Length: 401
Image 1 (cartoon, one colour):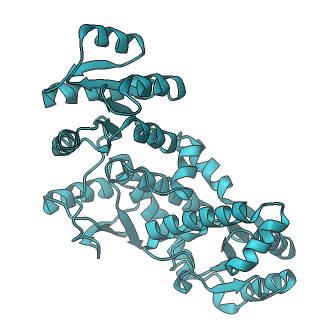
Image 2 (cartoon, rainbow, N blue to C red; image 1 turned 180 degrees about the vertical axis):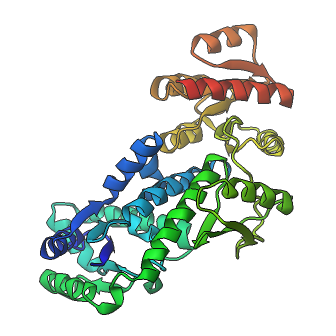
Image 3 (cartoon, rainbow, N blue to C red; image 1 turned 90 degrees about the vertical axis):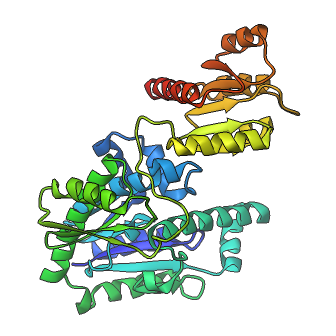
């Protein structure tokens, strides 16, 4: 029997519909979290990190770390293995990982207009403002996910076999539509669709091998022939192609490897392989804009990823949303100064290593900062090589904590 994937907005009775469909058909209901837990255990990565990669916007450092793509590669590997089974309802975002070529999976989208969703949300006890916020947050998560995978809006009809407006139909009718659709002859498992699953398994293995080597690439497979799609501009394309082919060719089951440039190859940003030892999640905090932007560019030339903020409050707000590995912090800033930022960071985010970089310090300042938990104290103008070595040492300490 075919399997089913159900993608949905929130407050559309999707869970009740999905559960009933599984009960009527005698299918197993698999939630995103089930697959995330499997990926966490199989690849020894924190489940909350994978969860963030699925539901939240890409990290400010993602162009360097490829963290979202690595987590997606882990999930593809788990999903590819799971597809060997049938009679499953995949409920949530991860059904989108199943390739279109796997034709024995019915792809369903459950959605309703905003007014109807607000009414359902408020019926649960939320205020109108809380309901609007919850709907917006969920829809943003949907958009981040489908943009990453397809560069499409989450409700794009091309992503689904059927879209059901739950505000226009009773729940029983929604269930009936799905149950009748899954029994359509066109969704029967065939030799071709089973081969598509085998191709997906192989492509997932290659993506995983590339991810473990620091590369973020989309891969397709066709009976042992693998194609790697390069989506971003790269300075030395032929060298990258040789490296990718070498990695992919070592994966069991690969007969031949091909590369091609994708539609986004000519974007302005330049592709960089992720170096697991080089600092790539560095937050630079300094109110001297010209200085800190130049510093960020100099770090970029050494393949060190950074994000820049211009005052202490911005720094504290940023860290609440996303934790860097290392912070490079000026002391003298208007408003919230470097001392207060250092105190708050070491109290609330003790793993983050803080390097003080100041042009107006003293030995007393140095002693105070080190006592407060700073990793190092440097003075402007800083030698970029010295800063780079200090950043690497700080990242190594972060990784051990």
